[in-house]
Length: 211
Image 1: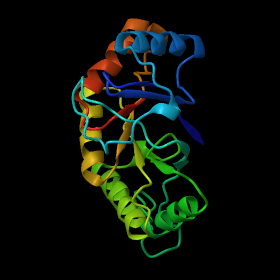
Image 2 (image 1 turned 45 degrees about the vertical axis):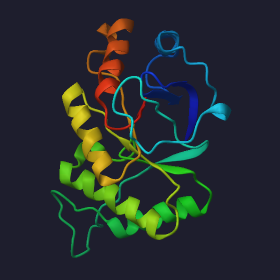
Image 3 (image 1 turned 90 degrees about the horizontal axis):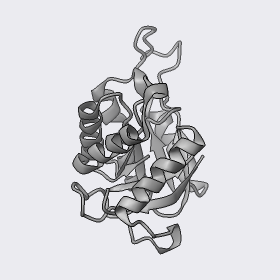
Image 4 (image 1 turned 135 degrees about the vertical axis):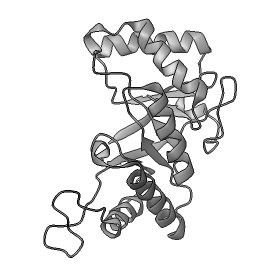
């Protein structure tokens, strides 16, 4: 589970969460640079209400999700033996997905992290990603949970691809985007390079960005 959040920057359209994906000392240094750049002094208890992803440029205020517990949700596929099963490319099982999402929010979970590290995102086509997010947004809304945000995983190794996933996630109904830094050449990545990566995405993102 993920606890939101431990630092915030309205100027950069970014906020930070635990757990973090880089070595602790490296990430703390990057976060410190962001905080100094943005003069970010807010704490979780004093943050403003969320803005549903209307922040698209530096200088506009990005608000993090409401305080609470957010669960990385697995992606469900058609079971072997069912009529919809395809051994090569099994389709999504949206019925089971919805049952699981509603089980979580009815149990007190504040929001869903879809297509994160446990969400099989790497195996889904673009249309499947959009279908998955849209179906769960509708399911939550129809069940009376319009206040439960969806955080969409949008990790890629290329800035333009990441921004495209963010855009599509917003169109499908996500309120926030979760972004990872470039990891393929992680040992050679500098502090400045990591900072510029997140700045470049945050400057152009259609949604508030979590790192």
